[in-house]
Image (tube, rainbow, N blue to C red; front, side, top):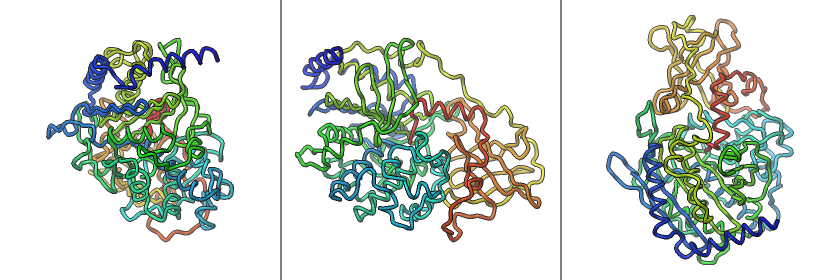
Amino acid sequence: MMVWSLQALLFISALSVVSARIFTDEQVSKLETFVEGVMKCRQIPGQTVAVVVEDETWVRGFGLADIEQGVNVTKDTLFGIGSLTKAFTTTLLAMMMDESNGSITWTTKVKDILGPDFAFVDEERTGKATLRDLLTHRAGLHPAKYAISAGFPQNFTLAELQKRFRYLPEVHSFRDVYEYNNWPYALIGRIVELLSGEPFEVTLEKRLFKPLGMKHSRVLGKTISANDTGMAKPYYNVENKLVLTDPSVYDIHPLDAGGGIASSAEDMAKWMHFLLRQGVTEDNVTLVDYTTLVEVFKFHEYMPYGALASKPKYPVMNLEYGYGYAWYLSVYKEYNVSMHTGELNSYTSYIKLYRDFDIGIFVSESGPGSTYASFTENLISFYISDILLADEPWLNVSTACSYPQPWGTWLSTLQNNSDVTNTDVECLDCYIGKYGHRLFGDVDVKKGPGASLELFYGRLRGSLNTTDKEATFKLDLWEPFRFYARPGNATMLVEVIFHGFNNGKYSFVVFGYPHTMTFTRGISFYNEIIFTTINPEISGQGVEEMSSFLLVFASLCAAFSILY
């Protein structure tokens, strides 16, 4: 305890030096050199940084928002912030709780808000699940990331999602384990809609963006597109070339409440100030009661992902150990941190709050989206933290470019096409046809050139390559998701398995990771919905076969918190 007190005193002493201007001219020069050097070696087209200390703000744009037009990133350039959106959604929910005069709390049952017609996949969840279960990723439901990528019809609303939520399968026992999931936050978005009486994006604008002066922030797919003026254009490293990605893949409705916000360094600085003021605006208006807001930063769920860096292997410790409500709990060196990552295809973002010392750091980049660059924003936050902590930075441009070397090692280039045979498909008619799911949508398997097959699933489409296993294929995605299949110099194909052979045709097609999704012949997303519980085998639990590569990649994403 004495050690911590001494460290706190030293920190406060250092803080008094930087609070007036945050950084000295020399520190600014070193920080800019560091960021620009890391951007160059990691092929980052555009990046934005915001730092707040007490009432002071420092913001900078780096690189290009539009390579083709030569447009620079500024403090007002918008970036997709991915899962950093979740904290906005949770704050809106907290505001609704305050207004409910105690009738709604974090432990209120979901069905008590959504009504008796609402249901999860089983009676236990339907009867017991609370807002806390949704917020802490412990509901045990299918993450179904490919369904989000495939997209939904434009007229598919949160109200419709509420009706179909019973078709989201379970993958774990209720409250058994933590597994990150965007779908429960979409349901929180629906709850915010019901309690506010307005669409989620309207409530977000009225209740947070406008009062905080976040005048540039928008919702992707609703109030702005990724290729609109003011956005940092999203680039991805595809086959070792930086490619502008299709703006349509950044519309993730109806899951906007889980990852749809586009914001700028200037606006995110205002957001961090608001959080560090404990729910009070710059104009001294309380938007959410402190006793309600503080709950989002508390430990509510153990998170077993471990450390991005730890002693003695690394010079410092950076340990993530728990989850609150849309905030990870971590320790950098000996300091408590509230943080979150956000990943939406090309965009990668990071927010870090040292709440004990009124410090906030935000970093966002517009590419290149490959795993190699995915933790760059973390490294920049480390460098900034060290300056504010009055410590000698343990990273320089050289080690940040080689990271995790010289301390650790990185996986060799990932390839999972060694089992591809590319032979003619026997019995094309056995596979051809439409397969559906009540929530995830429809898959259409068609005849390709010669004796080959092609798969069409919303925005996900590509060729089905034969493998050395019967009825097992590798999906090689085309545009607009070519970057899934060819990130950097890797090859990442999706395993697709057909099963349930009956009367000359397969009944089911399954794919996805870390849990497979099952689509059934004869069922369609567009059929009239019959509100019943689901056979687990048909819902996506029946087949859990994955290549060793997919297991490695899923674990990798978890380790570095590569999230929506």
